Length: 459
Ligand code: 5AD
Ligand code: SF4
Image (cartoon, rainbow, N blue to C red; front, side, top):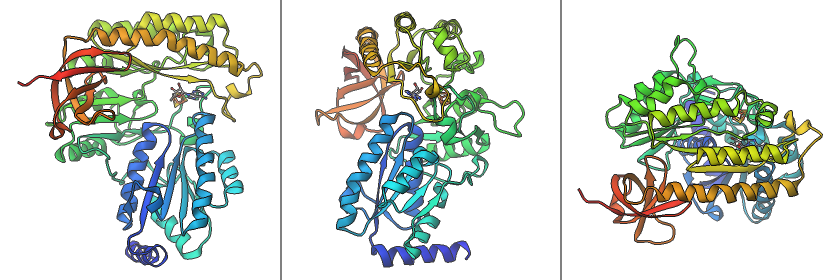
């Protein structure tokens, strides 16, 4: 069957089995990579003639885009699949599960075995195959499973339905080669593959032409971006090339690995106005003993050197990190090293986690696991140490005027808008809805640990 015949067959099968207004609903778990994958899935399904709905009860096709970074993320998915079983009994419903969990054999087999209501399973590299899998399911009624790695970063032709008209995620690379000893990602997302720079630059140009002001470059480890066949072209050169695009106002990226962040990239923060003054640089732990066991390949001293270098270049850079407590064998002394580091760096924000053993990783095989009780106690003490620091950093901005990209109405108060500063601070201020999607100056008047409040300045 050629592509057109297949498209006709799919339209026909959708109409016949699901009706002429077939709708889909996507539930996304996990990181920005997954959020962006869901935007791609949405685009693929629109092409296949379905319509998106945010109402789960209206949907004929429900997709769960899953995450497996921690055990709790997987549990949420199992809970949701249990709930969907009842819905499927009530009506004609197709349930598809995709994302990182489906790349893991153990989770996939458990879903296949325990959740018979699941009709389609596909992996992180098979989004483009979804129409084909849907057609197979509609025609045969069989359960369809497709997780093979058939997609190449070099032939990325998938567009995405961006949820926002003014800011977008853009993938620059997929996968990870690092094998941090706690992490499941190299097993679920495979080895690193970088997209050709030409494709990325074209994609960003198209987005900017359609009104996008801010892009966030996505990769598990953006600093090791190395497109094949492009000589010594690297991440910093990509940033400089992107900064040339007229009309693009802000460039962000995530996530960086401290061992790979180069001096030339640090300099780019100073050189390029468009590169936002915000760096998310996960430290994970403050003890060299733990960092070594984590296979992070840097010491706390290496990390701090990079932070000081960056602060020399850009004194007002906002810093964010990821920290994990309760890694196997982490002693009270090791944990104190983490608290010391946090006090020394004075982060602006942080993502904090309890270590969660992931089957198949080296750390999960370590017999000296830390008890849940100790993990929780350390977690609380970490937050008690960090929150006053966040507050102090935010209060230091009172009286300053920050450029804010307005993202929407505040959840708590309809007259208030909220947006992000260059340093990724959440800022609330009073204003009209027509400011959404614009960058406006806001004078900061109040602050707590997590956000800022201010007044719009009229220029
Ligand atoms: N347990 C707890 N946190 C984890 N992370 C990754 N793997 C685990 C795990 N097994 C955290 C790390 C990483 C972030 C995305 O999730 O801090 O930077
Ligand atoms: Fe996981 Fe480490 Fe790769 Fe990040 S760099 S995705 S923590 S293995």
